[in-house]
Image (cartoon, rainbow, N blue to C red):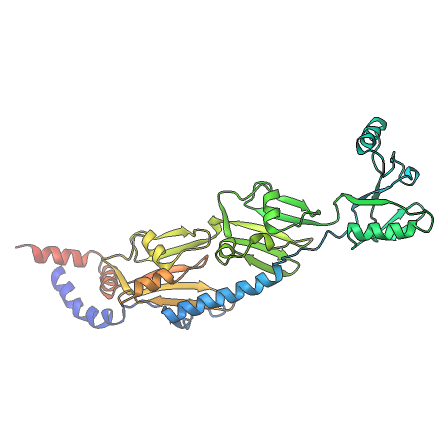
Length: 372
């Protein structure tokens, strides 16, 4: 009886389930519970699509880089909170320190200063960007370089002193800072000084990148603007990463490789989550690291890549049976959080549906038919 029942249901299943068992991807709307929205259009992976995706990626990357690259960084500009060391040679009474003549022997000057245990007095730049200096009064130095501030002070003192010889430098840099976080050895604040604060300089001051740092996903926040920096792409384009200049208040985050994963599911030998290699993982590599398409149940015609973008959800499809498909799969680069899904063959779907309707029926029928 079991064999007869199974044989009777086979024609119905072959005419109904088998005809429409090819899987489809549906997206449910949160506003209409229980209803399925139309699936987004499927884009076939072709050489033309790969070229267009690569060109769009390069255009977006170049737009960001143009705003960050500074080949000739300007000199440090004094800001509020900085401490200036000012020396007027031959006039120690102006700074309160033991200052010798500019024409005296440097060794003698250093010995005299050390013996007197005196150091040049610092002048703090206030919130309004000013310092108060004897004879010169209030001077606005914010936004000026050391040389410009020295020239301004010299011109003021020239009204009272004959040929004043002034030395001015920043003694403590406290007005401008950047913050670096993520996969670096010592995250935290980094003060901007007379050495240009490039991205490479900030990473080096933070102790360098940790082994789990993703060099392809370095995020730079500047106000409301966000920039994605890929060090690997910069090197490939012969662009020196040392030209990426940071600005005061920038926040740099170095993401971990664990945050850049691709999920492979469906009819593959070993479904798993794969970590990208510094931002690079092709479709061919993802399938290979998952054991490839299952030879028993995988449909090579239906290899999908589901990608969520800020604008919409995109679904790409690869027909692995056509000539050149492996080359296209190697050229198609995945992005973090992509989902690679391999659909099942019609026969595998038919077998599973039959097993749901009659658990163990097909196995019992085959066993009974094989007995003499």
